[in-house]
Length: 208
Image 1 (tube, rainbow, N blue to C red):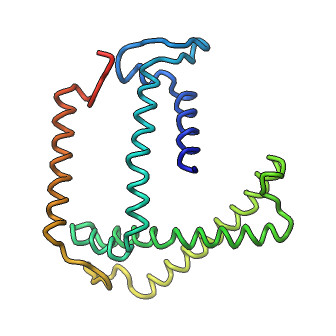
Image 2: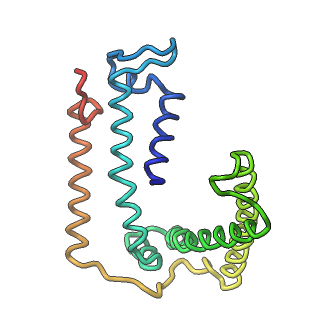
């Protein structure tokens, strides 16, 4: 539901701030509805925004499944295995581990603020709900900054980054299927680049 709401808001924002983006991309103009001199509904713009929506449908669910089913420590060690610097890999691992903590802190602060009388339910006026959300977000930001400083101090005290290499508590060796998937991804990238070269930078243009 949140994904659908986000895509709706994103499409509205695209049309408000870039109503001619589809015309610029595809190089033609097929006007369907005249609104004002700036805002006109065109087939190119609708097709462009349809492609943007399909990208979200294709990428976001896969990314969510990946992050929900992947152990952050193993993911960081895998990044280090493919020659990503261990500091970058560890930063990614910390980010993934930190998401549940932020969600937990948000719930705790929200419940504490509601116990103090802050109303963020649908029955409250919009202004009151916005004020209530701000009353939750500000403590959440400061709490998160405190945790970041705590983690940073702990890493510094333990000498993180003093050596050029590090070992990992949990890691998995590459299997033949890993190499098959990597080869398949490289093949898909090469085919995509070849298609873009042949079609002058577009996978598909129905307006030519």
